[in-house]
Length: 287
Ligand code: NAP
Image (cartoon, rainbow, N blue to C red; front, side, top):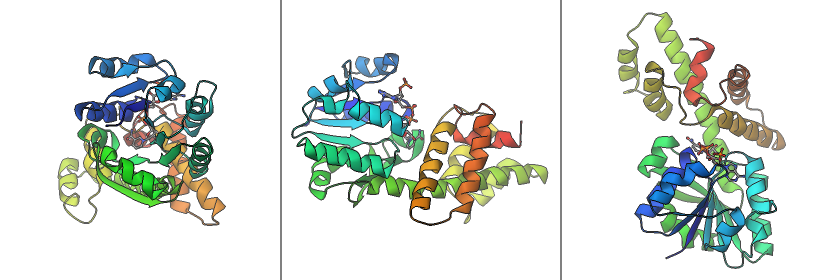
C-alpha cells in the first residue's frame, strides 16, 4: 500500500483525503492555511510543514491547490515538491491548471527520476463528497495503471486521455461545456421568472427532457434557496475559462460562446462575487 501525501485541502481536497483515509491509506497533509487540515488530522492524517516534507514522507503525492501559480509554487518553490528527492515517486496534480504546466512538471519529474500525471476532476463539491468524481488523466500509461485503483477510491470514472497535458486539455473541454450549461441554466431562470411561471415546476419539467444537465439539477435548487456558497468558486471558473480561451487561441480556433460566458463571469468578479459559487451568476439579473 502506497504512503500518500496530499497538498491542498480546500473544498475538493479535504473530501478526497477523507475517502483515502476511509480506504485505510496513510495520508500526510499540507495546506497553506493549516486550520483546513485540522479535521483531517483528527481523522488520522498526519500534518507536515511544507510540500517538501510531505514529499519526503510519501511515495505518491497529490496536489489540489487553486491556480496555476499555486501549482508552480507547490512544485518549484524553495520548500516545494522538487526540493525533495523524488526518485521513484509519483506526483499527481488534480488542480485545474494549464496543459503547459502539466508538461513542465512531467518533464521535471522525469529529469529527477520520478513520475508525474495531470489528473483534474469534474463532479463538483458533491462529486468529491460522494467519491463519484470523473478523473481525466494525462501521462504515461504504465504510471496510470499503477495508480488507477487509488484514483478509483474517490472517482466513479477514471480515464487516461493521452500524454502529459491531455488531462488538462480534457478538463478545458469539460469547462467549455459547463460554460454553456451555467449560462443556459441562469437565463432559463431569468426567463421563467419574467414569464411568471412556477419555477420549481419548470425545473421539474425541463429537467426530465433534453435540457436536463448537471448544472440544472445541482445549481438551480441552490439559487432558489439563495445559497451562493461554493461549490465551485467564481474565481476558479474565470481562471478555467481564461485557460480554455488561451489554449483555443494557440490552436487558432474561435470560441465565441465561451468568451461570452467568461465576460459574464468577469463582470461578476468585478462586482465582488469572486468567492461565491458559480451559481451566483444569477446575481447579474436578480440583485
Ligand atoms: P479551494 O477550496 O480554494 O482549495 C484549494 C486549497 O489549496 C486551499 O485550501 C488553499 O489554501 C490551498 N493552496 C493554495 N495554494 C497553496 C500552496 N501554494 N500551498 C499549499 N496549499 C495551497 O478550491 P477547490 O474548490 O478545492 O478547488 C481546487 C482546484 O480544483 C481548483 O483548481 C479548482 O478549479 C478545481 N476544481 C474545483 C471543483 C469544485 O467544484 N470546487 C471541481 C473541479 C475542479 P488556503 O486555504 O490558504 O486558500
